[in-house]
Image (cartoon, rainbow, N blue to C red; front, side):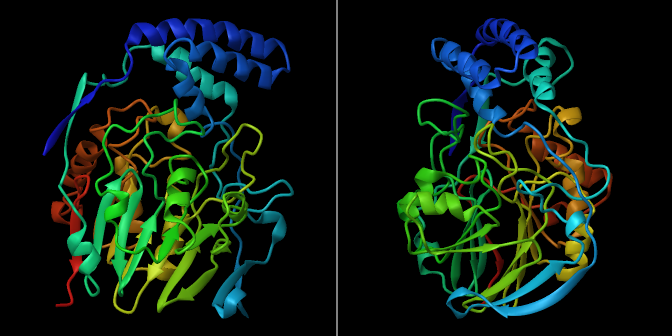
Length: 416
Protein backbone atom coordinates (compact mmCIF):
# COMPACT_ATOMS: atom_id res chain seq x y z
CA UNK A 1 0.00 0.00 0.00
CA UNK A 2 1.25 3.50 -0.84
CA UNK A 3 0.21 6.45 1.30
CA UNK A 4 0.46 10.13 0.56
CA UNK A 5 1.93 12.32 3.20
CA UNK A 6 1.38 16.03 3.57
CA UNK A 7 4.33 18.35 3.25
CA UNK A 8 5.73 20.32 6.22
CA UNK A 9 4.22 23.78 7.04
CA UNK A 10 4.42 26.45 4.34
CA UNK A 11 7.84 28.13 4.05
CA UNK A 12 6.22 31.58 4.45
CA UNK A 13 5.00 30.62 7.91
CA UNK A 14 8.44 29.44 8.92
CA UNK A 15 10.15 32.56 7.57
CA UNK A 16 7.77 34.80 9.51
CA UNK A 17 8.26 32.74 12.66
CA UNK A 18 12.03 32.83 12.33
CA UNK A 19 12.18 36.59 11.78
CA UNK A 20 10.58 37.00 15.17
CA UNK A 21 12.95 34.39 16.58
CA UNK A 22 15.94 36.39 15.30
CA UNK A 23 14.73 39.24 17.49
CA UNK A 24 14.47 36.82 20.40
CA UNK A 25 17.94 35.49 19.61
CA UNK A 26 19.34 39.01 19.87
CA UNK A 27 17.64 39.31 23.22
CA UNK A 28 19.18 35.98 24.19
CA UNK A 29 22.69 37.18 23.35
CA UNK A 30 22.26 40.40 25.33
CA UNK A 31 20.99 38.81 28.50
CA UNK A 32 21.32 35.73 30.65
CA UNK A 33 17.58 35.10 30.68
CA UNK A 34 17.89 31.89 28.67
CA UNK A 35 14.78 30.23 30.08
CA UNK A 36 12.73 33.40 29.57
CA UNK A 37 13.82 33.47 25.92
CA UNK A 38 12.78 29.87 25.34
CA UNK A 39 9.44 30.51 26.98
CA UNK A 40 8.93 33.56 24.80
CA UNK A 41 9.66 31.53 21.66
CA UNK A 42 7.31 28.81 22.81
CA UNK A 43 4.44 31.20 23.55
CA UNK A 44 4.89 32.98 20.25
CA UNK A 45 4.86 29.76 18.25
CA UNK A 46 1.70 28.50 19.93
CA UNK A 47 -0.16 31.26 18.10
CA UNK A 48 1.36 30.36 14.72
CA UNK A 49 0.42 26.70 14.30
CA UNK A 50 3.41 25.57 16.36
CA UNK A 51 5.71 26.26 13.39
CA UNK A 52 8.72 27.20 15.44
CA UNK A 53 7.58 25.20 18.44
CA UNK A 54 8.40 22.09 16.43
CA UNK A 55 11.93 23.45 16.03
CA UNK A 56 11.99 24.21 19.74
CA UNK A 57 11.20 20.60 20.54
CA UNK A 58 13.92 19.45 18.17
CA UNK A 59 16.26 21.83 19.95
CA UNK A 60 15.89 19.74 23.10
CA UNK A 61 17.96 17.16 21.20
CA UNK A 62 20.70 19.45 19.89
CA UNK A 63 22.37 21.72 22.44
CA UNK A 64 25.83 20.92 23.78
CA UNK A 65 28.30 18.05 23.85
CA UNK A 66 31.69 17.25 25.38
CA UNK A 67 34.44 14.70 24.83
CA UNK A 68 36.61 12.01 26.34
CA UNK A 69 38.77 9.11 25.25
CA UNK A 70 38.64 5.45 26.22
CA UNK A 71 41.38 3.81 28.26
CA UNK A 72 42.07 0.13 28.97
CA UNK A 73 39.47 -1.97 30.79
CA UNK A 74 39.55 -4.73 33.38
CA UNK A 75 36.96 -7.50 33.35
CA UNK A 76 35.25 -8.10 36.66
CA UNK A 77 32.44 -10.49 37.49
CA UNK A 78 29.76 -9.96 40.05
CA UNK A 79 26.22 -10.96 40.71
CA UNK A 80 23.60 -8.48 39.48
CA UNK A 81 20.26 -7.80 41.09
CA UNK A 82 17.74 -10.67 41.08
CA UNK A 83 20.58 -13.16 40.64
CA UNK A 84 21.37 -12.14 37.06
CA UNK A 85 24.98 -12.80 36.16
CA UNK A 86 26.61 -9.58 34.99
CA UNK A 87 29.99 -9.08 33.34
CA UNK A 88 31.42 -5.65 34.01
CA UNK A 89 34.25 -4.03 32.11
CA UNK A 90 35.28 -1.20 34.40
CA UNK A 91 37.31 1.74 33.15
CA UNK A 92 40.56 1.99 35.07
CA UNK A 93 41.23 5.69 34.54
CA UNK A 94 38.24 7.57 35.95
CA UNK A 95 39.52 10.96 34.82
CA UNK A 96 39.47 9.74 31.22
CA UNK A 97 36.15 7.86 31.35
CA UNK A 98 32.78 8.91 30.03
CA UNK A 99 31.66 9.82 33.55
CA UNK A 100 31.73 13.39 34.85
CA UNK A 101 30.68 14.94 38.15
CA UNK A 102 27.48 16.18 36.49
CA UNK A 103 26.73 13.14 34.33
CA UNK A 104 28.41 11.85 31.18
CA UNK A 105 30.47 12.96 28.22
CA UNK A 106 31.41 11.73 24.76
CA UNK A 107 34.33 9.54 23.65
CA UNK A 108 37.39 9.85 21.50
CA UNK A 109 39.59 12.66 20.19
CA UNK A 110 38.13 14.73 17.40
CA UNK A 111 34.68 15.13 18.92
CA UNK A 112 33.69 18.75 18.38
CA UNK A 113 31.59 20.49 20.98
CA UNK A 114 28.47 22.15 19.58
CA UNK A 115 26.76 24.99 21.40
CA UNK A 116 23.29 26.47 21.49
CA UNK A 117 24.30 29.31 19.18
CA UNK A 118 25.12 26.69 16.54
CA UNK A 119 21.59 25.34 16.83
CA UNK A 120 20.09 28.76 16.20
CA UNK A 121 22.51 29.32 13.34
CA UNK A 122 21.18 26.13 11.76
CA UNK A 123 17.47 26.63 12.40
CA UNK A 124 17.30 30.35 11.60
CA UNK A 125 20.17 31.59 9.44
CA UNK A 126 20.89 28.40 7.46
CA UNK A 127 17.25 28.20 6.46
CA UNK A 128 17.60 31.44 4.52
CA UNK A 129 20.52 30.11 2.46
CA UNK A 130 20.39 28.21 -0.81
CA UNK A 131 22.01 24.85 -1.41
CA UNK A 132 20.23 22.46 0.93
CA UNK A 133 18.01 19.75 -0.57
CA UNK A 134 14.45 20.72 -1.38
CA UNK A 135 11.83 18.72 0.47
CA UNK A 136 8.94 17.51 -1.71
CA UNK A 137 5.33 18.50 -1.21
CA UNK A 138 4.45 14.80 -0.92
CA UNK A 139 6.28 11.70 0.21
CA UNK A 140 5.39 8.25 -1.08
CA UNK A 141 6.26 5.47 1.32
CA UNK A 142 5.15 1.89 0.83
CA UNK A 143 3.70 0.25 3.91
CA UNK A 144 3.50 -3.52 4.34
CA UNK A 145 0.23 -4.64 5.87
CA UNK A 146 1.26 -6.63 8.93
CA UNK A 147 -1.31 -7.92 11.40
CA UNK A 148 1.35 -9.62 13.50
CA UNK A 149 -0.11 -13.15 13.21
CA UNK A 150 3.15 -14.76 12.08
CA UNK A 151 5.11 -12.80 14.68
CA UNK A 152 2.83 -13.90 17.50
CA UNK A 153 3.18 -17.54 16.43
CA UNK A 154 6.93 -17.50 15.71
CA UNK A 155 9.06 -19.19 18.36
CA UNK A 156 12.06 -20.31 16.31
CA UNK A 157 13.02 -17.92 13.48
CA UNK A 158 15.43 -15.02 13.90
CA UNK A 159 13.43 -12.10 12.48
CA UNK A 160 13.47 -8.32 12.32
CA UNK A 161 10.42 -6.09 11.77
CA UNK A 162 10.75 -2.36 11.14
CA UNK A 163 8.02 -0.45 12.98
CA UNK A 164 9.51 2.91 11.98
CA UNK A 165 12.33 5.30 12.96
CA UNK A 166 14.55 3.30 15.38
CA UNK A 167 11.81 0.96 16.57
CA UNK A 168 12.44 -2.67 15.66
CA UNK A 169 10.87 -5.90 16.79
CA UNK A 170 13.64 -8.48 17.05
CA UNK A 171 12.75 -12.14 17.53
CA UNK A 172 15.73 -14.18 18.69
CA UNK A 173 15.90 -17.54 20.48
CA UNK A 174 12.18 -17.44 21.16
CA UNK A 175 12.29 -13.97 22.73
CA UNK A 176 10.52 -10.82 21.52
CA UNK A 177 12.64 -7.68 21.89
CA UNK A 178 11.69 -4.07 21.10
CA UNK A 179 14.28 -1.34 20.43
CA UNK A 180 13.59 2.33 21.25
CA UNK A 181 9.81 1.90 21.00
CA UNK A 182 7.69 4.88 19.94
CA UNK A 183 4.09 4.54 18.75
CA UNK A 184 3.07 8.12 19.55
CA UNK A 185 1.99 10.62 16.91
CA UNK A 186 4.73 13.06 17.96
CA UNK A 187 8.18 12.75 19.53
CA UNK A 188 7.66 15.54 22.00
CA UNK A 189 7.06 16.31 25.69
CA UNK A 190 3.50 17.37 24.77
CA UNK A 191 0.94 15.59 22.54
CA UNK A 192 -0.22 18.69 20.65
CA UNK A 193 3.07 19.96 19.21
CA UNK A 194 6.54 18.89 18.15
CA UNK A 195 7.87 16.71 15.30
CA UNK A 196 4.94 14.73 13.91
CA UNK A 197 4.99 11.20 12.55
CA UNK A 198 4.85 11.11 8.73
CA UNK A 199 4.13 7.40 8.55
CA UNK A 200 1.95 5.36 10.89
CA UNK A 201 3.68 2.58 12.88
CA UNK A 202 4.27 -0.48 10.71
CA UNK A 203 2.59 -2.72 13.28
CA UNK A 204 -0.16 -1.73 15.69
CA UNK A 205 0.80 -1.87 19.34
CA UNK A 206 -2.04 -4.29 20.10
CA UNK A 207 -0.84 -6.66 17.33
CA UNK A 208 2.58 -7.18 18.92
CA UNK A 209 3.52 -10.55 20.37
CA UNK A 210 4.13 -10.58 24.12
CA UNK A 211 7.25 -8.46 24.62
CA UNK A 212 10.00 -9.95 26.78
CA UNK A 213 12.64 -7.19 26.65
CA UNK A 214 12.60 -3.47 25.79
CA UNK A 215 15.94 -1.91 24.83
CA UNK A 216 16.51 1.85 25.24
CA UNK A 217 19.55 3.57 23.71
CA UNK A 218 19.04 7.03 25.28
CA UNK A 219 16.36 9.33 26.62
CA UNK A 220 15.59 11.62 23.66
CA UNK A 221 11.90 11.86 22.87
CA UNK A 222 12.19 9.96 19.58
CA UNK A 223 13.84 7.01 21.36
CA UNK A 224 12.23 6.95 24.81
CA UNK A 225 8.51 7.66 24.53
CA UNK A 226 6.63 7.89 27.80
CA UNK A 227 3.20 7.05 26.37
CA UNK A 228 4.45 3.95 24.55
CA UNK A 229 6.45 2.68 27.50
CA UNK A 230 3.50 3.07 29.85
CA UNK A 231 1.30 1.12 27.41
CA UNK A 232 3.87 -1.67 27.24
CA UNK A 233 3.64 -1.78 31.02
CA UNK A 234 5.60 -3.62 33.68
CA UNK A 235 5.77 -7.07 32.09
CA UNK A 236 8.83 -6.58 29.84
CA UNK A 237 12.33 -6.24 31.25
CA UNK A 238 13.63 -2.77 30.37
CA UNK A 239 17.36 -2.54 29.67
CA UNK A 240 18.59 1.04 29.83
CA UNK A 241 21.93 2.90 30.00
CA UNK A 242 23.13 4.49 33.23
CA UNK A 243 20.81 6.98 34.97
CA UNK A 244 17.90 6.44 32.52
CA UNK A 245 16.08 4.27 35.06
CA UNK A 246 15.02 7.39 36.95
CA UNK A 247 12.75 8.18 34.00
CA UNK A 248 11.12 4.77 34.28
CA UNK A 249 10.70 5.12 38.03
CA UNK A 250 8.77 8.37 37.58
CA UNK A 251 6.45 6.54 35.18
CA UNK A 252 5.75 3.77 37.66
CA UNK A 253 7.96 1.08 36.09
CA UNK A 254 10.27 -1.01 38.25
CA UNK A 255 11.21 -3.99 36.06
CA UNK A 256 14.47 -2.64 34.67
CA UNK A 257 18.21 -3.19 34.66
CA UNK A 258 20.59 -0.29 34.22
CA UNK A 259 23.96 -0.89 32.53
CA UNK A 260 27.07 1.17 31.89
CA UNK A 261 29.24 0.87 28.77
CA UNK A 262 30.82 -2.57 28.39
CA UNK A 263 28.54 -4.11 31.01
CA UNK A 264 26.43 -7.09 30.07
CA UNK A 265 23.87 -9.46 31.52
CA UNK A 266 22.34 -12.81 30.64
CA UNK A 267 18.57 -13.03 30.32
CA UNK A 268 16.77 -16.19 29.16
CA UNK A 269 19.86 -17.42 27.34
CA UNK A 270 20.70 -14.18 25.51
CA UNK A 271 23.58 -11.89 26.47
CA UNK A 272 22.66 -8.21 26.32
CA UNK A 273 25.69 -5.91 26.30
CA UNK A 274 25.64 -2.12 26.63
CA UNK A 275 28.10 -0.61 24.15
CA UNK A 276 29.48 2.92 23.60
CA UNK A 277 27.95 5.39 21.15
CA UNK A 278 28.82 8.98 20.24
CA UNK A 279 25.71 11.00 20.98
CA UNK A 280 24.24 12.87 23.96
CA UNK A 281 21.12 12.91 26.12
CA UNK A 282 18.50 15.13 27.73
CA UNK A 283 14.82 15.95 27.63
CA UNK A 284 14.98 19.58 28.79
CA UNK A 285 17.59 22.34 28.46
CA UNK A 286 18.49 21.79 32.11
CA UNK A 287 19.38 18.08 32.06
CA UNK A 288 21.88 17.88 29.21
CA UNK A 289 24.02 14.72 29.42
CA UNK A 290 22.74 13.76 32.89
CA UNK A 291 21.92 10.28 31.55
CA UNK A 292 24.03 7.95 29.43
CA UNK A 293 23.55 7.03 25.74
CA UNK A 294 24.62 3.73 24.22
CA UNK A 295 24.33 1.06 21.56
CA UNK A 296 23.50 -2.61 22.24
CA UNK A 297 24.67 -6.11 21.42
CA UNK A 298 22.36 -9.15 21.58
CA UNK A 299 24.32 -12.40 21.56
CA UNK A 300 22.12 -15.49 21.28
CA UNK A 301 22.78 -19.18 20.99
CA UNK A 302 23.19 -19.03 17.21
CA UNK A 303 22.88 -15.38 16.17
CA UNK A 304 24.51 -12.07 16.98
CA UNK A 305 22.74 -8.71 16.59
CA UNK A 306 24.00 -5.12 16.94
CA UNK A 307 21.74 -2.11 17.51
CA UNK A 308 23.64 1.15 17.02
CA UNK A 309 20.93 3.36 18.52
CA UNK A 310 21.85 6.95 17.64
CA UNK A 311 25.47 7.89 17.00
CA UNK A 312 27.98 9.87 15.04
CA UNK A 313 30.92 8.04 13.52
CA UNK A 314 33.63 7.22 16.08
CA UNK A 315 36.44 4.68 16.57
CA UNK A 316 34.33 2.77 19.09
CA UNK A 317 32.64 0.91 16.24
CA UNK A 318 35.89 -0.92 15.52
CA UNK A 319 36.36 -1.83 19.17
CA UNK A 320 32.81 -3.20 19.33
CA UNK A 321 33.52 -5.29 16.25
CA UNK A 322 36.75 -6.59 17.71
CA UNK A 323 35.16 -7.56 21.03
CA UNK A 324 31.74 -8.83 19.93
CA UNK A 325 31.72 -9.19 16.14
CA UNK A 326 30.99 -10.50 13.66
CA UNK A 327 27.25 -9.74 13.64
CA UNK A 328 24.65 -11.57 11.58
CA UNK A 329 22.56 -8.39 11.56
CA UNK A 330 23.33 -4.77 12.43
CA UNK A 331 20.79 -1.94 12.72
CA UNK A 332 22.59 1.27 11.73
CA UNK A 333 21.07 4.81 11.71
CA UNK A 334 21.22 6.62 8.35
CA UNK A 335 18.97 9.68 8.79
CA UNK A 336 18.91 13.17 10.37
CA UNK A 337 22.40 13.94 9.08
CA UNK A 338 22.08 17.38 7.42
CA UNK A 339 23.60 19.91 7.71
CA UNK A 340 26.84 18.02 8.19
CA UNK A 341 28.65 20.87 9.95
CA UNK A 342 26.08 20.53 12.74
CA UNK A 343 25.04 16.88 12.68
CA UNK A 344 28.37 15.14 12.03
CA UNK A 345 29.34 14.61 15.71
CA UNK A 346 26.03 12.98 16.64
CA UNK A 347 24.48 11.42 13.51
CA UNK A 348 25.96 9.13 10.89
CA UNK A 349 25.43 10.01 7.26
CA UNK A 350 24.73 7.10 4.86
CA UNK A 351 28.38 6.82 3.81
CA UNK A 352 29.54 6.68 7.42
CA UNK A 353 26.83 4.10 8.12
CA UNK A 354 28.44 1.79 5.53
CA UNK A 355 31.81 2.27 7.23
CA UNK A 356 30.28 1.64 10.66
CA UNK A 357 28.80 -1.64 9.39
CA UNK A 358 32.24 -2.72 8.21
CA UNK A 359 33.84 -1.61 11.48
CA UNK A 360 31.50 -3.69 13.65
CA UNK A 361 31.87 -6.61 11.23
CA UNK A 362 28.22 -6.69 10.34
CA UNK A 363 27.08 -9.07 7.61
CA UNK A 364 23.65 -7.57 6.91
CA UNK A 365 22.57 -3.96 7.56
CA UNK A 366 19.09 -2.82 8.55
CA UNK A 367 18.98 0.99 8.09
CA UNK A 368 17.05 2.79 10.85
CA UNK A 369 16.38 6.37 12.01
CA UNK A 370 14.84 7.58 8.75
CA UNK A 371 11.48 7.97 6.99
CA UNK A 372 9.34 8.67 10.05
CA UNK A 373 10.05 11.98 11.82
CA UNK A 374 11.38 15.11 10.11
CA UNK A 375 14.30 16.08 12.36
CA UNK A 376 16.87 17.50 9.93
CA UNK A 377 17.39 19.22 6.58
CA UNK A 378 17.45 16.23 4.24
CA UNK A 379 14.17 14.94 2.76
CA UNK A 380 12.79 11.88 4.55
CA UNK A 381 13.26 9.63 1.53
CA UNK A 382 16.83 10.73 0.80
CA UNK A 383 18.87 8.58 3.28
CA UNK A 384 18.25 5.15 1.66
CA UNK A 385 19.01 6.56 -1.80
CA UNK A 386 22.31 7.95 -0.55
CA UNK A 387 23.02 4.68 1.23
CA UNK A 388 22.67 2.65 -1.97
CA UNK A 389 24.76 5.23 -3.84
CA UNK A 390 27.59 4.66 -1.36
CA UNK A 391 27.11 0.89 -1.49
CA UNK A 392 27.41 0.93 -5.29
CA UNK A 393 30.42 3.24 -5.16
CA UNK A 394 32.23 0.75 -2.94
CA UNK A 395 31.09 -2.21 -5.10
CA UNK A 396 29.38 -3.85 -2.15
CA UNK A 397 26.47 -6.28 -2.65
CA UNK A 398 23.13 -4.49 -2.35
CA UNK A 399 21.51 -7.60 -0.92
CA UNK A 400 23.49 -7.05 2.29
CA UNK A 401 21.59 -3.79 2.89
CA UNK A 402 17.96 -4.54 3.66
CA UNK A 403 15.98 -1.31 3.29
CA UNK A 404 12.74 -2.41 4.90
CA UNK A 405 9.36 -0.83 4.34
CA UNK A 406 7.35 0.22 7.38
CA UNK A 407 5.79 -2.93 8.79
CA UNK A 408 7.99 -5.33 6.82
CA UNK A 409 9.30 -8.48 8.50
CA UNK A 410 12.52 -10.10 7.32
CA UNK A 411 13.49 -13.61 8.36
CA UNK A 412 17.23 -13.42 8.95
CA UNK A 413 17.69 -17.08 9.88
CA UNK A 414 14.98 -19.72 9.75
CA UNK A 415 15.05 -22.75 11.98
CA UNK A 416 12.21 -24.76 10.44
